[in-house]
Image (cartoon, rainbow, N blue to C red):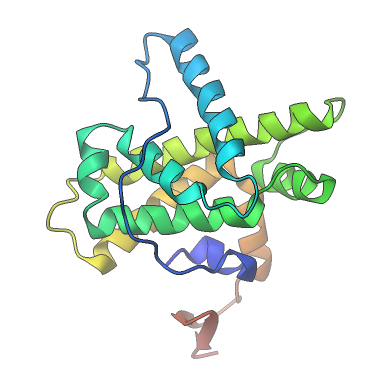
Length: 202
């Protein structure tokens, strides 16, 4: 699964256990943009804290972000859909973070399609964290919107998350799509085999 992310070998990680965590603020109402902005700022700061050091805080933080989507998110964490979501979120977070170094900031800004010139290093770090939160929320909402998590098997769950990832990348990570287009084989079929992509019928 994670076909977009499979083109970036450094994003390869194992599926984590889907356990609900605490930390992120609940989704704000669409009618309260100021509260939503406050939640995004708080979650961005919490993401930076979770990714500090060896990044052990990322998994519980991201699980909490899924749970903050409401009952559907909390249910998903106990199901294959939640594990698929956690896999993608952790792959992205561990590959891009920490945002503190200049190379990491340049890499993330290119993937996110952001222009950060003129900002201080600290402001760039925070801007990237907030953008990651927006992207993660969009991915979570997209995966949950396609139907209940109960009764969904692993393959269907991965397909749902992959579809949501493509839609999310178009809006929040266009650089990931562009990278995929440059590297995808022109013809034939392919399949995932461990950490490799095997091209068939070329």
